[in-house]
Length: 317
Image: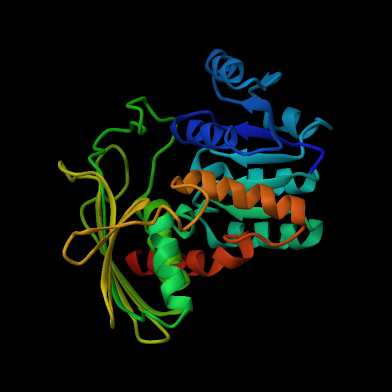
């Protein structure tokens, strides 16, 4: 614990800032490098968070001996290749969701992690939100068995803007990004692999080139089912809302907050050391590095999610 874990962060956009804010709350962490597409913006972020190195070139940061680990908050299409580059450079890596948008690329990351022995995990934040942790502990204790998960992932995103209202340099995807959260969580919470998966999608946007609406059905080997509705067309409450219907209770998770089926709030403040899912995710990354162990949401543990997404993509054709 005497030596700090020295972090480089690539992609200081809306989600990169969430990680930087979380890392500031974790003891024994030093932010040493910021890698951004636009140097002036990256420099501004580096100044705010005390990073001494700024660049537009990830390889430059990976070559630095004072970088132990990298967090990738870059466009989806870069995730797998950048993860492999980081691992081969001897760095631990946490890559934001999704691990990949092609299954073969995700498998290549897993193989590279095995070859290098470095910590590699994916930002499947739902595993860490106190709300979902509460449900997971109930399941593990045998106090709650999930019969169905009903999930809505809704945004109003008819133009290519990020969460801060800034233009994106890449196009987001309902299947490979947003459905990945739920597909992984469903298997994690039921502790059972998906054996049936179906999907339909609405019209493809004429300029973005993606489907703006999608519906997915899943069934786990233990019989539990999941219904997932996704939309970039929803002009209303934004975000992802999970309803767990089980044998002993109904729970509704809204990010870090949890409610029962009657919409009465459940206190989850003692579930973990923080109420911030991103912070808890980053704490797991740092702890896994220090302890030399496989993290929760390791690339190997989340790969089954991407196998389901690949199956669904082929179905959508």
